[in-house]
Length: 208
Image 1 (tube, rainbow, N blue to C red):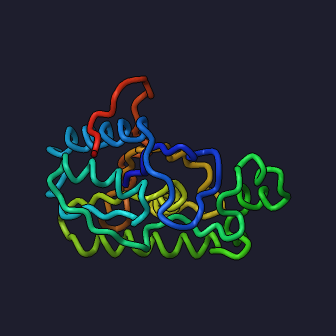
Image 2: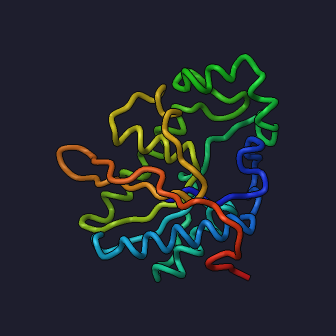
């Protein structure tokens, strides 16, 4: 699982509805580094069977870099989108952090619904079910999924058997790579939040 690369609003505001922001220059560079890492790791993986992406701009652009590097077409799946933040969408995170409900988001997410939007348990069920279904569709193969921070945290928490109320304890950075082996008798988490240090410079791969 790969989180999208950095955008101008990443970590600054709750994502707004619609396609959302595009990757920043740094985000394109990060996506290239994630692609390079997966390519370097590819020899130890099963055959790559698919590349799936949330249909938002930042994930599609990240997936396009992976597609070029891995030689796989991108399949968009709307079930991989971030949690619908409802009335909180587009609001700066430093303002949201002052709301009394923010403590619930952090400490008791299983009991939180975004006003006018989706509940975190609904997002959890949607994304976890989707990723497990994609794994079942590709027996014996590896699948690359490009999504968002909270959905990836949810999938990792499910694989580790961790209660949803603890999923915020997992860090998923922009363009980070995490990996799960959906084997028997239970999933095994192989990698969490792989990144490289940020540094100035052009993107490794840049789409026109």
